[in-house]
Length: 215
Length: 336
Image 1 (cartoon, chains in turn purple, blue):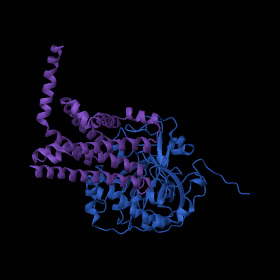
Image 2 (image 1 turned 30 degrees about the horizontal axis):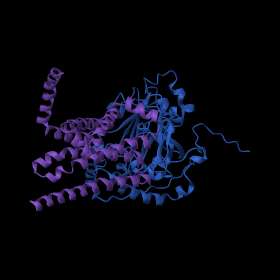
Image 3 (image 1 turned 180 degrees about the horizontal axis):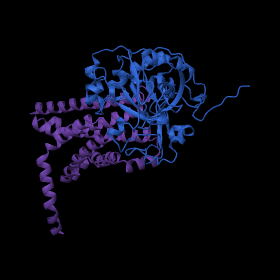
Image 4 (image 1 turned 180 degrees about the vertical axis):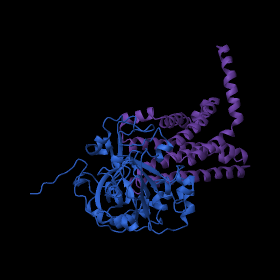
């Protein structure tokens, strides 16, 4: 029993280390290339694309964790979900800040008008704003305090996934194959939650009248 | 006393790349190789996968030939975009939709032999062979701003000859009202034309068009070189159009056909998304692209991520004094 627990813990540690390296090294290296003007003709466009696609990759990975952990009965995989989610948020934060700092260059009125006027940016920004409460409530102590409502809140990640897929698809000029592949991945991950989503919709429908009765 | 006449589109001295940088271009070219590899490493796994197919074939690098031309001494006001960036940041979907792809996938593109046919409503149809491109007309340098519809811009020293000179030689007849241009269609050489995935799903061959008066305007340049040498393939070798007051997609690359026609010809981006790209495509800070603002642009020069390079976009890309009269009485919101 003890040895089994230790190996599980080691596996978790190992996988977490891999995630740290896999997320941090490309990020730091790409910023280094961009700052030193070695990231192609337009480092701004390149870094925005890199962090955006990176955030999407990490979000997909995060949402692949629980189906994978269940299928292979691997608890240590489950233990890495929060870390992956937080990296997805970090990449998304970099993506938004890159846009504001380097693309818009602190012209706040332009920033606001672009976010409001351009639907693909609005959708992306909405996805980012929805990510914030998920990142904040990922702290263990908050998670425990929230009890059941934590899972309900974090079900928002399915909506975020869809919004991000739309944001990517909408942002390109004509090269829709890559965003289409991403959209398919996203839909596949959602289809794995088919039953859960169905139950969730039913419950929210049937719960409302009950709550009204209680009041 | 020498009195120098400058026009408004003239750029002045501080716009030109420092001479040391210009002279150091071979070194910059070498660095570019590193940039290419770096960008490749840094791209996402999905994108990197797309490159693996080509990564194995080590391609020879295209070497440009020096051209004889009259230098542009009028332009002094803006910083040139370094040559390394001009030749590594390209929208040329025939060689891939990502900016660095054309520089990677176009190096073995064959520009010789080449034939450019001028036909249609002309009294004297003619064909220029590869050598004719450089010998038929005196070559001149033109330092122009290039404004991409994606809201970035460059300043580039092109080498070429006015399209007007070529058209006059062909002598358009009374039916000629528009000029239709066509890029080479050669899927064997142009991977973007072979594969939808690489070519971004636009219809090939790429076609563009101008009204005859736009085509005859002295600023409209048939371009065979940049930075003093023949065009690299990724920039549209051996011959391309440059229309500096219009968004970059009008400046069609690797042209094989110029046809004088009666009716407004179809143009590639307009066919793909008519609500986003019009036939005229004059640079206009007042009319936004439906998905982004055109009021300002990022000027690509040197400097990395922290370069403060966002500048206001000028009507007609700053060439209004020369070209605004062409669009007198036209509703530019309707004819974008």
